[in-house]
Amino acid sequence: MREATADTTSPGSLIAADRVEGTAVYNRQGDHLGAIKTVMIDKPSGKVAYAVMSFGGFLGIGEKYHPLPWSMLTYHRGQRGYVVDLDKAQLEGAPSYDAATPPDYDDPAWGRKVHDYYRVPPYWM
Amino acid sequence: MREATADTTSPGSLIAADRVEGTAVYNRQGDHLGAIKTVMIDKPSGKVAYAVMSFGGFLGIGEKYHPLPWSMLTYHRGQRGYVVDLDKAQLEGAPSYDAATPPDYDDPAWGRKVHDYYRVPPYWM
Image (cartoon, rainbow over all chains, first blue to last red; front, side, top):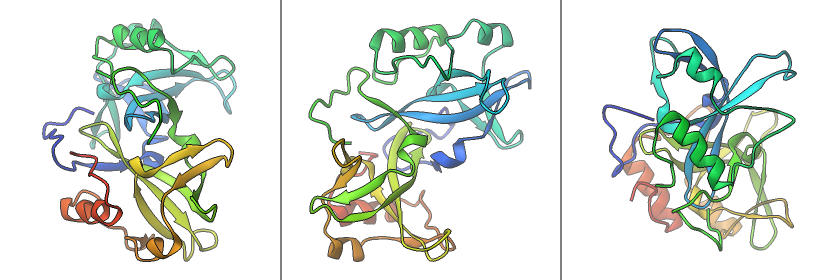
């Protein structure tokens, strides 16, 4: 999460995962892109790896999931949601999956692909 | 999370926060201590700070919450739950709160108190 006051040597600004879940995601143009379904935690390091954004579908059917590197998300109070620097065309080409075919989140090659797509450093570096 | 294979230079073993939520917590003696309500995320650093364990109460009334430093939890497949090295007497004296009086998770003094109680290094160090 990018914050103007980012400081990793003290406790910062804590938020409960169950409040992140369901939060809307917008791009900088104000388009509604989806909502956070859950966050993926890297157990050994205790780091949040991805926010998984869902969109489309009805009652979970036809829904698509986009793993977004956590560092891409900034919370905007005014919009009551997360803002990511991502236009709709970028999102259409982005790594995504549906509920029936989840990726192997533990696969380093897959993780690199997602981070490369968004041009952000991997959470494990 | 303590793992025998802990390695923070590569993606490790990812888990969705919404699957952590609801997972049972036991101590090493096999006593059921509670269940994970949510995890608290430190936004600037992207680190998981606490697993919040709930126990007692009915439909949320009378429920108590214990913030457990994330590093204390180990998942045990056999028990299908997290195991913490904590006896019941230790838990009774531990920092806790009810839904009506949540602590200020952003207060460094409060964070230090919790970590000191369990004798684990703070997540921000």
